[in-house]
Length: 435
Ligand code: ADP
Ligand code: ASP
Ligand code: MG
Image (cartoon, rainbow, N blue to C red; front, top):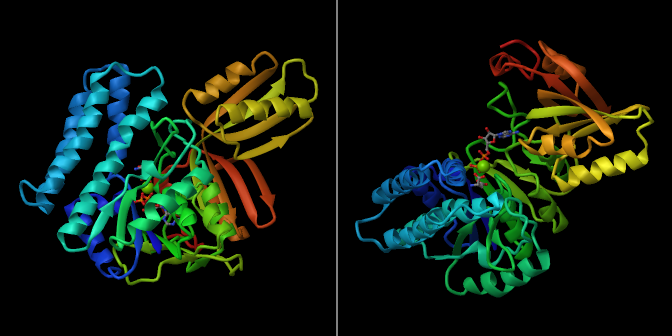
């Protein structure tokens, strides 16, 4: 059994669904769990619906109806009028309507999950129905019956034992009926049967959860790039594809924000030694990138840029040294507020951290430690990580930037830099010359 994951980019329109089906046609004799994301930018659109509902702007239902219509347009291209799929998708949309008819829940994150899950639910219904229509027998699985999480809405933590037991009980027997099982990425459910989501871009992680729990032979995620590249192609020219990556290298890259794979994806696969492939849905014959084992290749410099960072310079109000008990308190607070510390450095009287600038949470952090600490915040920064750096790459990346903070640990270099217009950056050629 293998696990395949198709993201929003691969299912953005009717042609996308047909293309995914044509890829799957090649695997019709294999047992596959097919994990799908919401179509195109549906999750962003659903986030707008949630925000409008929370603020009661009066726009929520209109925005939701527009999103429904976009799905119906795709469906009309794929199915004949009166196909059962229209009623099945409508049932899911009606559940969304019910949430919007109620007063907004006090818990924003809870409400978010109950609405945003609609994207994956309808996309999997449409994909499953289309596969059946073209003769690829496929069963639809509600991922919430399998993926058990705690009730951290918008970032559900997987309860592995329970999820594994569910997968064995529910999913494994489904292969007696058909080779294909289609399900949703990104969503799970609590013990009280409320829907949770696993964090934005979490469908890759869902695929890894299914792979781990079902002891998959391999997992493939199908993207709009030829594989994992040594930098984000939207920011850099002359990127190169990495044919093979160790689990460790992939974890390092994604931990520091390489957006091609969700950071939580690799670990479960590594634990069971399940190989993962990143393949192009535009060129399914090409080999893509294989992530497996821990043998290291000779890597070129690999660059990861994480935007929207802030530096917090923290010092004690009484000018005492920043000691271990202070740091213990600061880290406890950061963990409670789910503020992820990317880099840190301390001197005798100050402690500096680089963190993603998550709205509200940083202000809350600063407020809640203000009895003991003074904080100076610098915003609008980027964290650049270079694995296997060379002096040439560093020099190229520093051009036209102010470096506020830098650190080298073995083969990794991190630097926090200020304001770099993307236009300028695209002129940076990773190979060294100006393009
Ligand atoms: P999905 O459709 O599965 O959600 P994503 O859009 O989340 O796919 O991820 C694929 C995108 O990740 C690519 O289009 C590319 O722009 C971006 N990306 C960022 N860093 C890299 C990298 N190092 N290698 C390949 N793609 C990258
Ligand atoms: N649809 C979700 C998102 O856009 C999950 C995913 O695509 O991985 O974040
Ligand atoms: Mg994505």
